[in-house]
Length: 201
Image 1 (cartoon, rainbow, N blue to C red):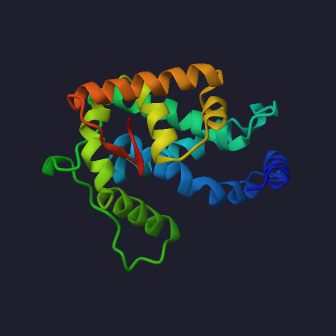
Image 2: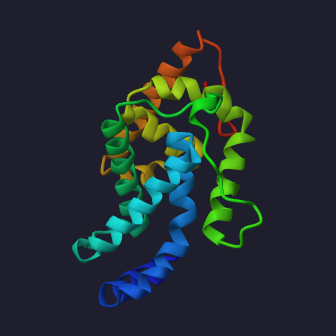
């Protein structure tokens, strides 16, 4: 969504909650993909995404424009929700190849756009061999590294965009990415692995 369109949509939603649907439709796919990349499980990602938009709607009146896109605010809420989810459940992100953590996806014949988006997102993850190679390594990293690596290499965000999402300086983001990559290298015993189409060097 363009900056001006985004701002108009937010301001309209502040006056009329029914107008929030425009924001939901525009950002639901992106937030779902981010949650799915972070959790590795479609059912959990769907729950997290639903909670993100529920909280965003309830807290919309508190959102203040400060040069940061509204989408960055949504990503920040999503990151906090993911942290809260695993804190409450006292477990690490699900493993794709663990049969005990599979989810019952909606029937693909369903006409619901959100259900189809969820199926599509899960399929993208399952068919992303590069991500499957590094998912176990990502799970071993502290959250601060998971966030920047997923946003940079899997979500393909630019450094300044990640800085906006996480509320940190670009220098700090670059440092976190560098350290995160170093930890992945160590995990793979010095062997480089592709991450989201980019080679970790």
